[in-house]
Length: 131
Length: 178
Image (cartoon, rainbow over all chains, first blue to last red; front, side, top):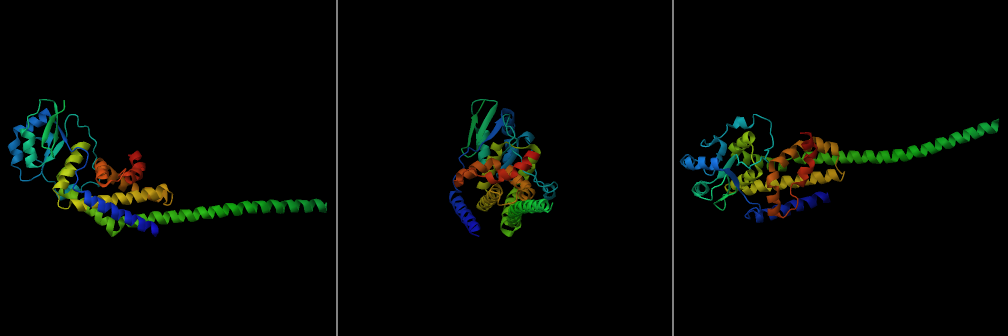
């Protein structure tokens, strides 16, 4: 019984610390990588994305200039629940970006050194050439 | 002749006595082990019960609601995959724009804490390994794989070292199978 009480205290303390620290940004940098062709497509079709009726925007980079459709509820549960597997190599660019419209403007208006691959830091509104 | 018979009988009684002592000792430790196993199963089943109880069920529902709101991202990641960088950037951006972000984070902390407890119970052999693996391995694997890219960030935000360790340990038998 004592053991459960101890765990409950730990849970409560952890939750309290969590809620106090929620406003702090995670220390790891939050970034998307884009290839030059992906970035070019976004620039050319910027108005398509600016005109989308949602904010933030989910932009599947390899489907540019198409906007994604919300899946039908049934589709989500058509298959057994699976983990969202990540860890894909993004040395040729990510498969998507998720940005607000103002961050999107930063992205398409930025003019960094020309490169094959870029890093976009949405919170800092900065686009950097990588290679 | 009678003396020899008596010696045999005495020897037989001594052998039976020694065997009886050995059997008694064996039975004693066997009973202790059996009691330990029964207790370990009870402990493991108590965690199974907690997993299905209202509190954790609500936390899982809260996490599910977050993903339902971002069903297009779920569909995209299932079809095209995502790097850990992109996933992390999406997750924290989505939290920034989600009014129930605290609810979600609280749910993740509670579930992580629960998996830590289960893993500790399994490692210390207080809980039965077979029951724990059979019930929690797949669930822990889904939890661990889904949130692994953000565990470091959540650990840094909360000051918890090795965030997600419990889920990772519980998921190992399943991860090695898949």
